[in-house]
Each structure stands twice: as C-alpha cells, then as structure tokens.
Length: 129
Image (tube, rainbow, N blue to C red):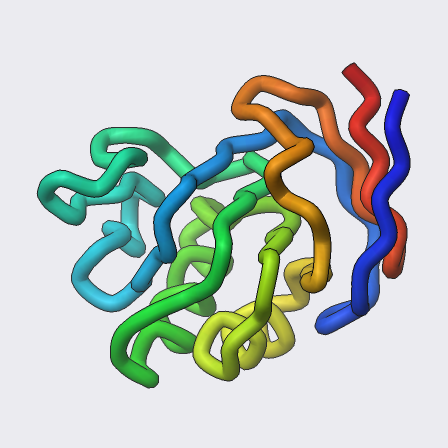
C-alpha cells in the first residue's frame, strides 16, 4: 500500500481500478459521452472505457465544452469514479465539480499504474494493490 497526497479539486471518496494515460485527455469529441470510451485516434487509451474507473492523466486539453461532456458522461452512468491529475486545468475541474466526481491534482501520477486498485479520499490517494 502506498499513500500519495495532492490538492483537492472536488472533495469526495471513491475507489476503483486505475486507468492511466501518459498523455493529456480532451473530453469533447475525444471521449464518447454515451459509452464512456476514448475515441481519439492514436491516443494511448483509444478504445478504453473510463466508466467506473479512477482516471489518471497529466492534465486536460481542449474545448470548454469538455466540462459538459464530463457531465454527460456522469448522467449516462459512464463517468470515472474519480479523476487524478498531475496538474488540473479549468475544463476538467469544472466538469468534475458539476458532475460530483472526486478529483485531486498535484499528485505524482507516475506511481500509479493501470490496473492498480486506488482509493481517493479528499486529498489522499491510496494505491491499495
């Protein structure tokens, strides 16, 4: 078990299996809001579902409508259970806030691997396996 500490963007508690991207994620047009699948051609997570996962990525990118796309994911039951970033940016932060998705940043995401069981509790990120 390993504990990391970051900055709370949206407070909350969640637990799930990590899905880690080494590259930024843009939500508008890059993640299908109905299925929760990354559809951006050539992205390392292309074809992967973010639904029910702890989504870990360096930072967000893209259009401000990305916030609404995160909200649509939540309404469709296809959103991540939590978001962990190395550095938050406003589009993803607003999306997490309006969608009630726990989010933390300023975390050393290099310590988290896809498939790790991770819990988020406020500013604390715990890698359980």
